[in-house]
Length: 144
Length: 144
DNA sequence: GTTCTAATGCAAATAATTTGCATTAGCTAT
DNA sequence: ATAGCTAATGCAAATTATTTGCATTAGAAC
Ligand SMILES: [Mn+2]
Ligand SMILES: [Mn+2]
Ligand SMILES: [Zn+2]
Ligand SMILES: [Zn+2]
Image 1 (cartoon, rainbow over the protein chains, first blue to last red):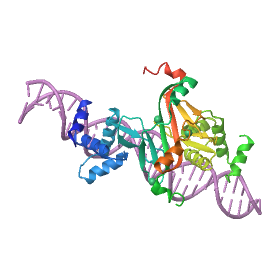
Image 2 (tube, helix red, strand yellow):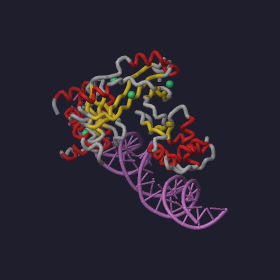
Image 3 (tube, protein in one colour):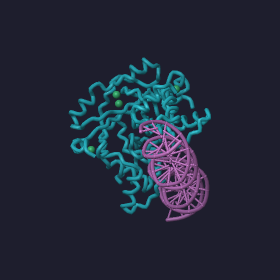
Image 4 (cartoon, helix red, strand yellow):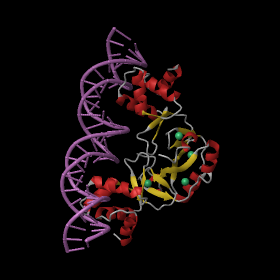
């Protein structure tokens, strides 16, 4: 619960509540996107008595304020959340262990531009997820 | 219900049922991916008395047999289904009217290859959706 | 037509998320 | 510090999309 978390909340007109700061802190520390349930359980495990709907509401709020981003990964049960680096990124998802790696390189180049010209659409953005098997999982990828 | 639909079903060991053929036919004719609910309602409207769970089960089956593909588009209520062209494609989604256009060009080039080498992952595939506003919707994009 | 099994209907279960409303706890101004 | 205001929370119930169990029916093969 470093102090700049409360600053970041205050800056966006959000009250600095225990749960809010805690959730943001957890996301900040996590190297992986996490589910609402994960966060909820982790808090209960540490005797932080929070309600599940508070977790959802908090995540929504943090997303609105761009402190957090919400990922919906195909075939993942529910949504995942990660601290928002504000950088454009993509995700590499291991189909074996479900580990998710962020990719900062965007292979689209100026494709959006080209597409805009060709289709006369106003392009707003894109979402690219890559699926595969991580080094540890590729060994067993063709078994069960 | 052209005859080659019953052929396609038979070919994959599926019984040629009225509902199944109908759903596959609807998907084949549609220029847009459609939801299970759409299909269900359209059938009811034409007095084809089908059960909602049958629609879901049918879609699952058709997906398994690669006759249909299932799309989960971010912020779309539920899944959408389209006749499977078996071609690699991406989707351009209008954030205004929710119209979906298929794109046959893939801007990734040999990025998967590069990524495989760099990460030592076994790449299985990718999913790319582009978001924007179609010509009709861009006019009103900045209003309500 | 009989038989066998896959497909269907129906109702109930799930899973993830959202909502309404009463209560509480942060902030702000005294 | 304290009172007052409003946003945040807890709790239980509602929603939405989808799935499942089980009894019944209807294709396909003979
Ligand atoms: Mn990109
Ligand atoms: Mn592609
Ligand atoms: Zn893995
Ligand atoms: Zn549009």
